Length: 77
Image (cartoon, rainbow, N blue to C red; front, side, top):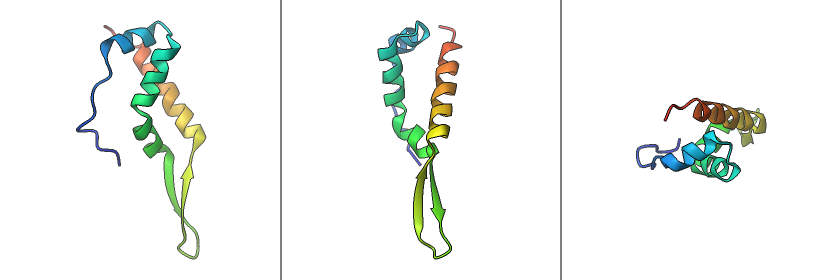
């Protein structure tokens, strides 16, 4: 999984811009959390022969991004 101990916080002005529906700030948010989101959306699958496959769930990725956006909009600054 992604190491979160060394991750920098998102800047306050970016959060404020997201609350005002700034698309550039929203893209910064998604880029900031891209590795973590991708890690949660990637599943390791095995077939009957033991072959390993990686499955990226686009729907789950979009759901996480939507929930992140909703959560940021609820921030009280």
